[in-house]
Length: 359
Image 1 (cartoon, one colour):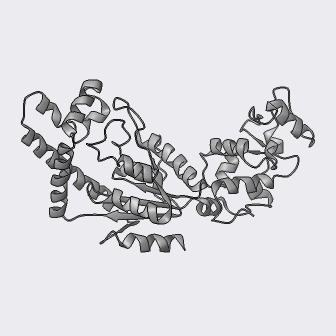
Image 2 (cartoon, one colour):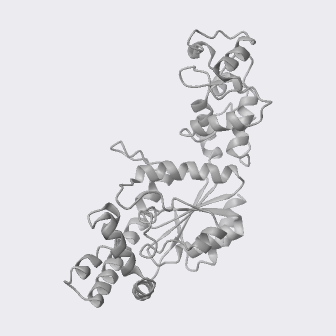
Image 3 (cartoon, rainbow, N blue to C red):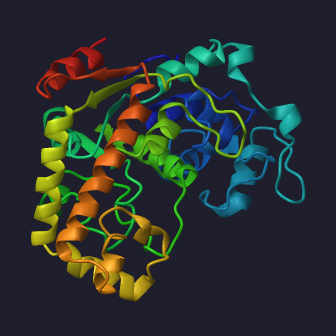
């Protein structure tokens, strides 16, 4: 029975395949769905190619009933093993899915539970950290990653861009070396990167991290990125789901108004001292001020400065003001989510996560 919440995604896949009856087949997508990640059919395919060779992988086909070219001996080798079990394979190396598909949730055997329950318990555990800019999210994420053997998924619409390091407060090379980070340096600054694309890659990353026995930790202040994952938004549809992803804890960090302003001023000056102006000039010359990434706070304010229309002091003041207004919008966004556990002290996080992982 595949009902152990401690099994990794790979282990659940292999347990299902182990129980497919002789003369029947399942699809990659069907197995992914039963394991709680309906969009992970390609991951299932990868497990099939590199997983336990003693399992009956020949009983797994694509949604059309097509056989796998990556199977030992290619599609013909795949066909040979199915034929040996009495399965008919046609001239284009496909089987009749409508006749042979095994549906364990209906027929009994494994996973004889309602699909809703299967999906709920099989979601990998996920820690999420949110809050406004300068609230200490990244430091908390690194702390939790060290304590719970985790890896970090960055939910930030600007750190996905290559070369935008100083102005986005991207995790340092040292931090990235010590703790593996995902969704950093994904595209060039002149490329568009959507929340839907983030969701797709983030979900794959969560599965990969969990499959290696690590704890996925998603951290960031881009509300749409975070909500797309934890509420499973379908960005190509008019209505979005509002049910929280199972097996998820969300921790929130917030600052009072004066502390927020003080931290913003300090952060901006630190960025200036570290060469933000040079970074902004270099990126603008390479990609242009109209590039998607160059509309970010900390970069766009330099355009009039380099045009000789404002002083450096005025530029810094504009960055501070725009950052504060952005932080207010972040706070408004996250306050709508009643599932967030707001921390008075970041040190509360360890106890909350420990309780979450043991219940």
